[in-house]
Amino acid sequence: MDNFDEQNDATGKSPDDQKSGNLKDSLIQLISRVDPTIDWSKVNWDQREGDGFGSCSSDDQRTTRKLEAAFYALKREKE
Image 1 (spheres, rainbow, N blue to C red):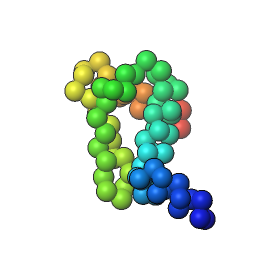
Image 2: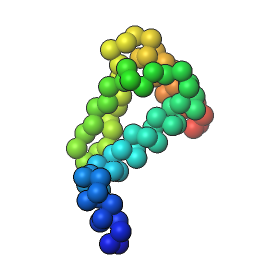
Image 3: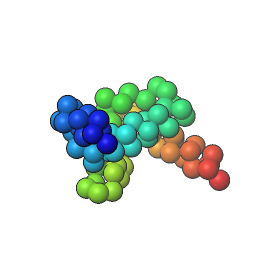
Image 4: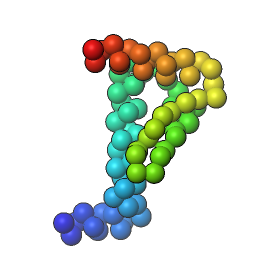
């Protein structure tokens, strides 16, 4: 456990920040499996305190359509 605490001190991030980062990274990897052409620099993240990432959106119409299509593809894959 001491190493874990030292890593947090070294990065300046709390464990909650790391969880949110890991959740965001996992979501990016999952959606990128469906559409690797999404430009993630154009994506806005809605982070809700305690709930992780509530949603992602984009001001760019093309990116928004890609996100929506990936969401529906993942939803169909789950069923």
